[in-house]
Length: 144
Length: 144
DNA sequence: CTCTTAATAGATAGGCAAGTCTATTGAAAC
DNA sequence: GTTTCAATAGACTTGCCTATCTATTAAGAG
Image (cartoon, rainbow over all chains, first blue to last red):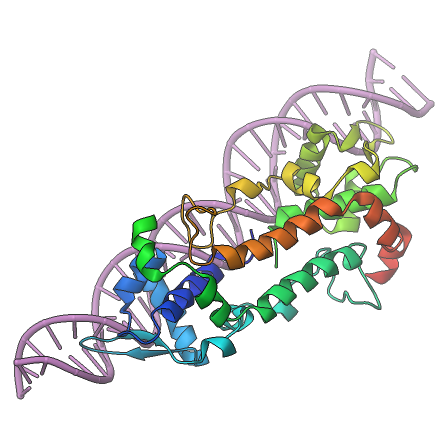
């Protein structure tokens, strides 16, 4: 419904990492299995998470990825942005170059309400919330 | 940000029609200009609006499209659905076939909050709201 | 009737996000 | 040091949503 496939993938991966906090690094094969993302494609997304400082990677034997930021300090919006999302670049519903309160497109006020609630969600949900609310990572295999 | 291009186009077109209620039919060239949608592509979308009963089309001289439902009875969700959107078919963030309250994916509760606010918006905003809140159609040309 | 305007239909093409493949680099174990 | 495991890099391919093109059908004007 919202966002693109890559955003979904990034959220899945970081969710797995937050659940694995404290344990050994999760290697990319495992991560690809849990998240059901093509492994090579996931690697690219993880690269972005590493560059943004949200994950660390460890090469070689026993290597993999681990979260490198306090979950309560990582918001959903941060992950989306790191994965390439940019709220400012989102086109106006009407396709207008300039569309703001001064020169609103015919759908501006209505659309703004939707954007506001999306922003509210993405900025006020942290990975600490996700860690607390999500099912256990161990249960993942069982469920699928 | 949300939904696909086609959904945006459908909302633009119906917004123009609701603003033109009472006047002569808006022909597809005019509609394409106002909405900035490729005219042949817009035709296909309008076909769906006609089939859904939200617009009427008039062929020949002086023909075009006009709204055929009371604005207060048409919700944003209706237009989205007619344009091809299906909430039930929206994949789970985690890509699970079955993902509900019984077998929630690790992001289920968090994602649900976003879906709820989207639904709330799409189901509770009518084209009467849009008509009242939007800038006048005459101003459109001026603004762009 | 016929002329003009405009919607409809379906086949075809483009563009870009998503996914794949191959090779390389880096780190740990022994 | 050498072997093995695993991340990184980047070129290449795929697939699907958008968009375009061509031809047809329908309706009103005169």
